[in-house]
Amino acid sequence: MARPNRSAERRLAILDAARGVAVHEGAAGTTLRAIATAAGMEPSGVLYYFDGLDDLVRELVFAASDRFIETIRTAVATAVDPAARLVAAIEAGSTGGLAGDESRILYEFWSYGLRDPALNDADHALDRRQVEIYRQILDDGAATGVFRPRLDVNAVAWALVALEDGLVMDILAGTKTRDEVVTLIRSVAESMLDVELG
Image 1 (cartoon, rainbow, N blue to C red):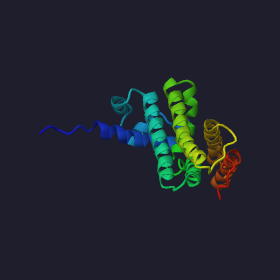
Image 2 (cartoon, rainbow, N blue to C red):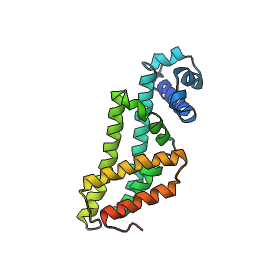
Image 3 (cartoon, rainbow, N blue to C red):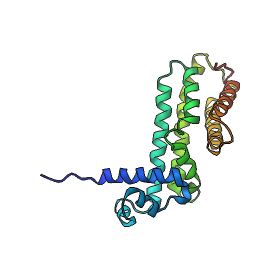
Image 4 (cartoon, rainbow, N blue to C red):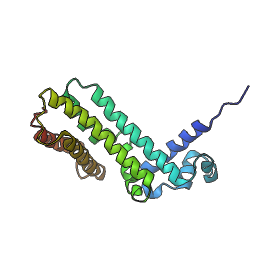
């Protein structure tokens, strides 16, 4: 009987260790040695599964992006109408990445995208995925007369994502509460869409 290939399991365990290091030590403390120690192995062992720290960080960011988008999609899927879906998207987009530390990971490594084209592409892809979620909600709401957009819906979607991007940093820095951020984004959405979200 062939032995099972545990390579995928080991990679996931290393990524989980990297996630813990990134959350507790930040980007500056996310070193190959720190990750290896957290995973209970030597740095050379980590390099058997990843091509280096940059490769590992990319995988970490990609996984955080996927989890973050899934959180938003799940929240939106349970809402019954465009207004409720918009509120769910705003709340999940602003605070949904905090519980699992996706937001912290994404912000910690954002500046790496300035030097790493793959991470830069990942950041833009994440923005486009969020915008698409908003755009579908806004299109549905405009088509049914719930929303009366004062701007093109694509512009509204991009503006809401940009607001989230900036204001989640305030939550992480402790300068604004979750409620303050959600309330502010909702009020901007209400103004841009001529709607009361309740």
